[in-house]
Image 1 (spheres, helix red, strand yellow):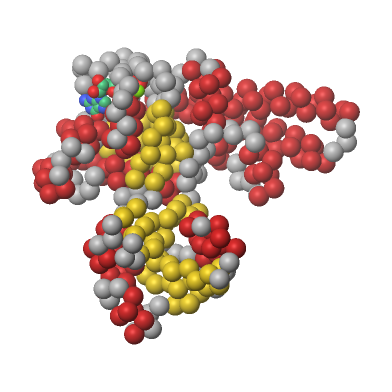
Image 2: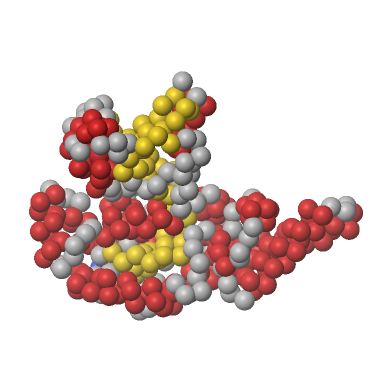
Length: 357
Ligand SMILES: Nc1nc2c(ncn2[C@@H]2O[C@H](COP(=O)(O)OP(=O)(O)OP(=O)(O)O)[C@@H](O)[C@H]2O)c(=O)[nH]1
Ligand SMILES: [Mg+2]
């Protein structure tokens, strides 16, 4: 799963990307290349389980981030830029809130709501071009061939066009599975789930939650599949350099409880419709990524395709119970380990042992 980091020039995209993924090289301002990195999904449950087993291997879930050059009408016409953006599963739009005289703003002043509206509109216009082209093509084809599939696609695209012309993103379309499939191939930009990442200055750090709430209230009503996450890029950049104990102290000195980067990654994870289940043992403690509402047999498949094919049942417990009992033997004694079949819906924080033939 890939999340594209986009935004206007000099808003802190590359700085964020570097903090998230640890990918440093070529991180110069104004770089034109598109870069991919992997971010660990922070998960305190993994650490708690690792304390019991002290395994040689501890593996967190991971998601990909892609650092894009600044977005504009022009870059959205570049085939390679557009192609890379189209294949992203979600978008993180970095919005500049920090005020810093030494960092120029493309539009002369800091105005987050204007910037959000402008970038949203560029994505919408880019989709409109695709929709109009396809409608034109369908107009011709439908005169030659009678096909209910084409007729439905035409109807859908006419609806999509109306939304876009009304400056509404395609995220607002409510689609059933069939229609969703009909549109999927277009990889519309304004249909992708979006996280607005508010990049605050240090001066605003103590008001971070307040500012986040303020923007949530302003932005989210009427915007499905969107989320808001506030972070303070400069503080986060310092944090990654510090050992854990000092990092906690550093956060407290700004009146913060948790790294904003953690909250941002978790927000992306939710937006992508993902969750984690865990496996724990002497050799490895690990978080695995699955779509929310996955069955036990699908979860088994995330570990190994053979486990899915040869699935017999899953032994399931909640991670807290496993920690409280200091491992499986205690759980078994108290009969807190449940046997579940293929169709069991895995819950966030379940620890699984897959029994297979
Ligand atoms: N004060 C302040 N400066 C920041 C912050 N984040 C980034 N900057 C500065 O802004 C400049 C641009 O940062 P980048 O991370 O390269 O921004 P970008 O969005 O990738 O820029 P382009 O790729 O050139 O569009 C650098 O000089 C950073 O040091 C921040 O949170 N606060
Ligand atoms: Mg950059």
